[in-house]
Image (cartoon, rainbow, N blue to C red; front, side):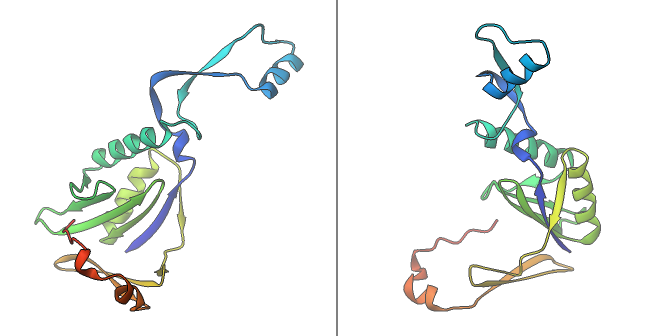
Length: 174
């Protein structure tokens, strides 16, 4: 089974480890004045959670995701830190999850995919998005058999290989 998921407001999920203060926006000052509790002087707000626009936002989110995956007994690849995977008791690969920021593709044995997605949902809000079958002129084929998970890609155009010689590619197992 293969499911694509997007984490809703991922950069707002993580707790900050350092003290970060921001100036209060003008609209907030106006709002507080209207409620009868005007803000006096040069007050600032201390952020407790990450927010979009912070340099730390992506890192804070990534740490939260890694903690979630670790709690679900899912490992992170040493060769590609954006790839999570899980083996069954027999050592067969039963789950892989390549991740790009807050979008991910959970694929593997149906029961494991569902278990891990439910585990992620206990921590953050997610929405499922349509599975991509073709991206950048590449067709993706996915499957699971008794040996594990496989994903094949088929190039629509061989021009890429003709234009960019593959002798410069350094292949690695993930």
